[in-house]
Image (cartoon, rainbow, N blue to C red; front, side):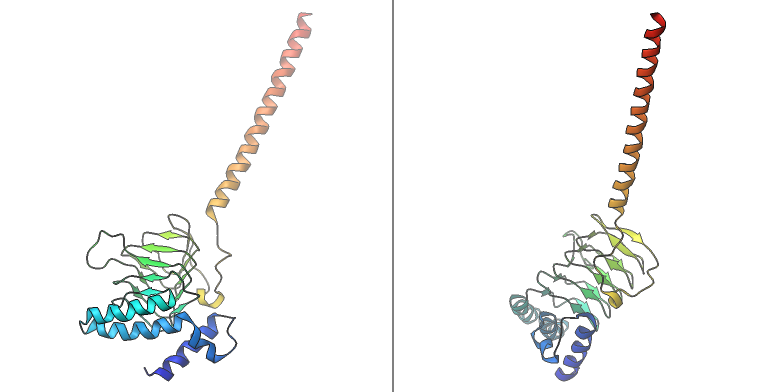
Length: 227
């Protein structure tokens, strides 16, 4: 793909997923656009076995954009990295088509494996701000990872994951994440559990108070009978 074609594709991606863009020329300023140009170049060098040259290109891009993509990573078309600062994509990560990553996302390894060490994201996955995906597993297509989540194991397709460690809180998502780009309105199972505990605690307190009232009443009646 030539430079002009790449600009057109990136503009279409950014315009679709970032309401802040007003002009096609703004695409040239986006860290996502700039780092992907360098990644494509570095990845070609990596595949040819020119590892030092590939890392040199990628590290220069990291310093300029705040986004670190290892040249060995495999990335499909339509990747959008919103803002981007602090994003890290490891060497054996595989990213499908039309994936969206927000700032602070890590596609990392646990530091113990050899071979395939990093996550695989299938098509249309959205990973919200600050989420960490660590290890060699697959996040199925159309799935959404909530902000700040730490995901350590397989995620089925069409699911929503939140929490530390991440767990599936919604299955069979009806919409592709990039259609809404919604990081906020996600299920919160921890909050739901807390509400259940609060309700049960209130019920227990009321029962104890009722038992104490009955006990006091019984003691009062017993005293009156003695008199």
